Image (cartoon, rainbow, N blue to C red; front, side):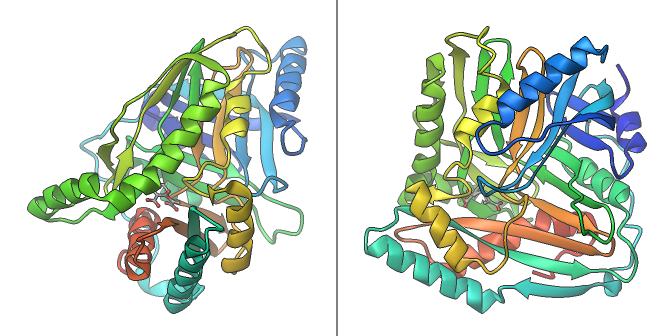
Length: 390
Ligand SMILES: C=C(O[C@H]1C=CC=C(C(=O)O)[C@@H]1O)C(=O)O
């Protein structure tokens, strides 16, 4: 077992880094690439793990990320070397200052804030006609620096600003990229984790920005718990997660009432769903198989899922890529942990593309959804030393 701080310091672009309260993992080199399409990735991962074990890889894992769309890109590999540590902890050390100058960035909004508000209005019309119950609409920021962005410093700042988050850095380079591309982020949302027969998911939806004033934060937490609009937005996600896991689990439990959880920048309604696998020895029920069955939840897509997916394609001007997908790891025993790829960015050379989305349901206020996406950008913007630009 390594020290969490050493693992973080050893990260280099091209490596895979993932940390959460369960521990940290740093993976280097590629023993095998897992190439498979939608719905067959868990099976292909299991085969790759078996083959790696046979060829002598010690305790092989599959690590990586899968994009939002069912037919989208994925970056899944069996790494050559894996190092693990305990969870990163809040240290007395302050995060390193950003090694770049805030003035050196250009920023493009896609769409412009007014265009996003317009998209939310159009989504509300689809909800009024009964075509949709919920859709999560995202917008993006494209930031360009005057020099290549050092991903290790960005990752270190994300981890140290919120050691409790699910922090990650994944190489997602594709043919034609001018330079290596890295997906980096600090997600609050556990899609699913599996340890032996025990399964846990932690759907989030229904949010308010966190502020500096603690009195105001207490008011916001109470307002979120009392908000019928946010509870309805949340119930869609908690219900779908429980329904899907119920197909695989016995003793499924979900708290009847959501609670509020906080990140350094947001408050969210949260439900913890736990269960025990009916047949843990079934090789078809790995953590990745459960994650594929759950994805995309209404925390990033909507209800009904098919119409929400087409509304997202119609209303969002930029393809989501890996945003709102999943990132994590799974091992030979089927254990693993996958999180929803939110509060994330893709970094390629001098460019950082951020996405943030907000759930739209009947009663949503377009201006409030815009403000919510601005607040969600702050996870990455703080790490970049660029607070206040969105
Ligand atoms: C889609 C995002 O957040 C999801 C997770 C938590 C709360 C959400 C919400 O309240 O809309 C979203 O469903 C994002 O951060 O881009």
